[in-house]
Image (cartoon, rainbow, N blue to C red; front, side):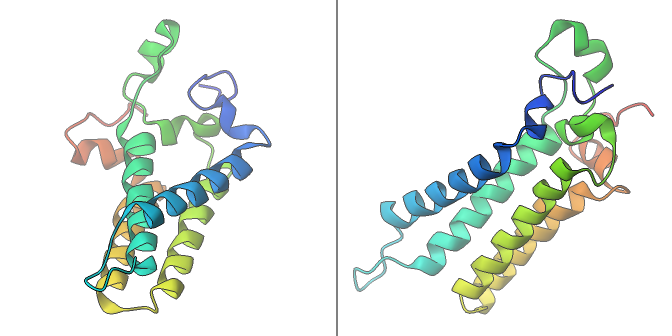
Length: 158
């Protein structure tokens, strides 16, 4: 299961992934900041927009990397049917540059969000929950292969 021949994850090793990822995050924050979250006084709350960006990022990346399994290529289906996208990255090798980016960006987004929200308790509880439950814990080597089991999916065969 070489990650470089797998169309699901081969794009993650290209040089434009990090800039594209960061631009997408900033666009999401900009969009969420301008579509709503009006307060009683008519202002828009940046705290809520940053927290919403972090929550949306956590939910989307959790589903994309830890719930999604298999491959769109018919020849790869028998090999990858029960393997999450996260486990397919770089052929399952740990702590590769692509994986480090996918761990570091959520952590930095969490820190930025907490700083902007002034570490207010309601926002902090939400952001810590998203970081721990959706963004970092599923990526830990001891947990990552069993996230699917918790969701009712069979863990991949070792």
